[in-house]
Length: 386
Image (cartoon, rainbow, N blue to C red):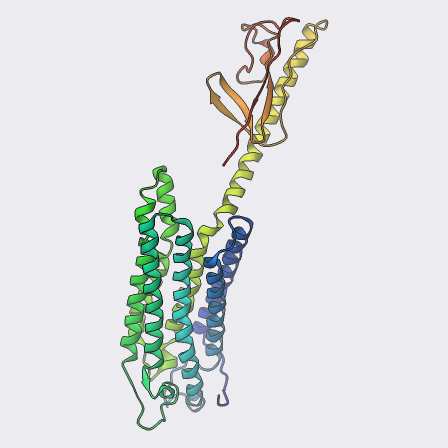
């Protein structure tokens, strides 16, 4: 690589780089939590290893983007600008980086798609769906390999891509090649998102759950929108006359598209953390409600003992430490607990006596006096989640 002259970043190029750094940081965090959730839950699978490799490729693309920004990206390559001689001297390096960048970009997109497809193989058991997924994996691999070969052999000889001084060298229409790549990328993205839709909408679940699951699986539409913007922008690039002056937006969108893809395919993997947060929040509210109910029963018991000091109360109410909630049963509402809650039936008061329910919303006891020969029944309810 020849000696490289570095330049200050133009404002737009600097803004693009900062934006991509922020999105890349978010992608690393989201992918990290996704892998952690899998490690603590169902286990890390091939789809997770693929997305981690894709993240490494995304970081490499961002590094190349940053290097580009320092060697003239955003400057117009025209003889009238003062920096023209140094910019022209940097063009060999710019084109060499572009050659590697476009191949890494292509495989970063392929890795994101493959991660989703291998995840489908883990979660869907219907034979026709699994067969369709395997066929799509083959299509994505053929798409990636085919376009890689197209990019490598776009010029003859191959070094003519970064050394236009080679005598007798020639290139095909690179803009058309990029447009075909982007268009087929959109088509394969839509194929990947459409694969599980038939299975999802035939699951036995509530409509709201189907809609939510569909939304998670179609987050990639945001990536498709970015790709469409790239398709429009690619025709503004001047590959031979003013590459560094017309490519900044295209390079920004390439890196942004990959990072956004990493985020979108990893967000569904954060569901275990959301459920844990939601359960913790619900448990906190319910524990407070349970404490209020327990307090009201204690007040009722003290009031009862004061009114009849010679009589020892035979009722007890036990509240477990875990989170609890109220469920409607045939006998009325009963307080239940995740770990199992115990209630001792209080038969020491008549049905018409409501004075013992001070502070409680509903009575949890039924009438009749507890005789010395009566049998006290302890009833336990437990809720478990498979």
